[in-house]
Image 1 (cartoon, one colour):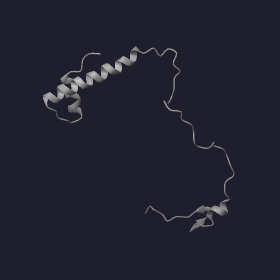
Image 2 (tube, helix red, strand yellow):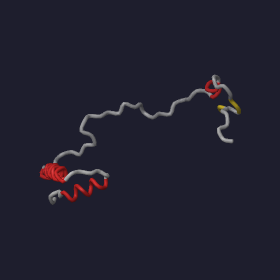
Image 3 (cartoon, helix red, strand yellow):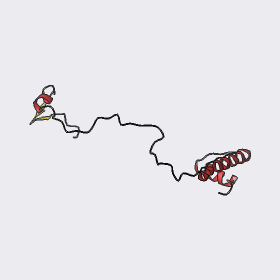
Image 4 (cartoon, helix red, strand yellow):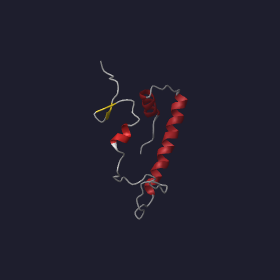
Length: 96
């Protein structure tokens, strides 16, 4: 990849509505260029026999299985409701 120029850094800074001095633009251009060069070194790695992973850490599912189970009886659910009508919770209207 080509070098990062001060003009490219200024363009990105303008998009982000940031203002930097010429010295800062030059510093950031060099730093961004160094980061990109370092990241490009990853392309040199031979990953032919590396098994793809979805996560770097051993992650296990802590959620229970999604199984159909019997639910509470409707009468028991509505027992403590302030108001019910036709087997459903009755709530005040929120629309006029």
